[in-house]
Length: 149
Image (cartoon, rainbow, N blue to C red):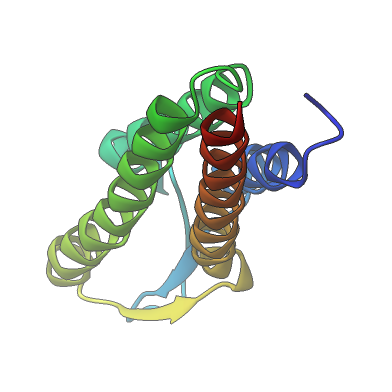
């Protein structure tokens, strides 16, 4: 299980997503030169907490799917399907992020600055694609060996 390269890829996906849940994804600079940090759970503006729980939920669900995919090594086709779904979910994360930025930018009347941690889900998408390719190669190898028997 752990000696397969796709397991390493999927564990890297989970690690990247866990770290992106903890790190800020950007900063809002208000008109009064106040700096507000946007995290996947939300943004604190004075006494008001604007929740962005959708972003956190997508990251958490993607992490759980990546970890579950590691243990589905006996059912490679399901592992491929779950990895494809995880990739689509991470693309949905970016769409959700853009929606929250659009709404919060108008509400706060502030400019937005990206953080480097916003790239982590993109790297996770790349590792998901590499894992899908490696699982597919394993499936082809197993089917070829079954045909020879």
